[in-house]
Amino acid sequence: MDNSSSVSDNVVLEELGHPESFADAVFFTLLFVYIALLITNFGVLVIIIREKSLHQPMYLLFCNLSVNDILGNTIILPRLLYDTISKDRLISYNACVTQVFFSHTYGSASHTILIIMAIDRYVAICNPLRYSAIMTTKAVVTLSVSAWAAALVLVGVLVGLSLRLSRCKSLISNFYCDNASLFKLSCEDVSANNIYGLFYTVVLLSSSMGTVAVTYIRIAVVCMTKKNAELNSKAIQTCASHLVVYLIMLLTGYIAIIMHRFPEHRLLRKLIIILFHVIPAHLNPIIYGLQTKHLRLKILQIFARKISHS
Image (cartoon, rainbow, N blue to C red):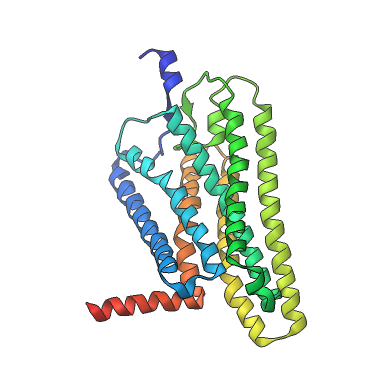
C-alpha cells in the first residue's frame, strides 16, 4: 500500500499511552467498566419499560439519558478495548467519521436531554395541578425528539464542515476519533471549522446552563414563597438527582476541555476523556435509582422477588 492510498483509506489512532506491562490490567478494567454500565443502564431501561407504574414523564425522559450513555460508550470503549491489546492502530476513514459523529452526538445529547428534564421538573414543581395536562405522552415524545434532533443537527453541521476538507495527514492526535483531530488531518484553511466549533460550544453550553439555571432559580423562588414543607420535600427529592447528574457531566466535560490546553499531559487528558464518558454513565442509573422513590422501590421489589424465588 502506497502512502497516498494509506492516507486516503485509513487513519492512525494515537496510543492510549499506558505502560505495556499494564496492558492486561487496563483491558480488564475497561471491560469491567463497560459491562457494568451496560448492565445498569439496560437494567433501568427494562424496569421502566416493563413497569406500567413508571410510565410517567420523568422516567420516560430519563430513558433518553440511558440510551445516550449506552450509545456514547459503545462508540468509544469497544474500539479502545481492541486497541489496548492490538498493535494495529489503523482505522478506516469512514469508521473514524462514524465515531466522530456519534461521540459528539453523545456529548451534545447529554446537554439537550438534561434541558428537557429540567423543563419537566420545573412544570412538576411550579405547576403541579397542571402537570398531567402539560406533560402528556405527546409532550414527552415531542421533547425527546427535539432533544435528539437539536443534537443531531448541531453535530451534523460540525462533522460536515470537516468532511469537505481534503486530507494530507493520517495521524489522529487522540486515542479515538474526535472532530478537532479529524479536521486537523487537512492542510487547508480550517477557520470555518474553528468558528463553527466555537458557535456550537457556546450555543450548547449557554442553552443548557441557562435553562437549568432559570428553571432551578424559579423552583427555588416558588419553594421559598409558598413555604410548603411537602412542596419543598418534593422539590429536593426530584430535583437533587437531576442537578447532581448535570453538575457531574459539566465538571468532567470542563476538565476534559481544559486538559486540551496541556498537551504535555497526554495520558492524564486521555484518562479524563474516558472518565467523562464512563462516570456519568455509571452514576446516572445509581443516582436516579436511589434518589427517585418510585424507581428505587421498583428495583428493591424486583430484587426481593428474585431472592424469594431463588
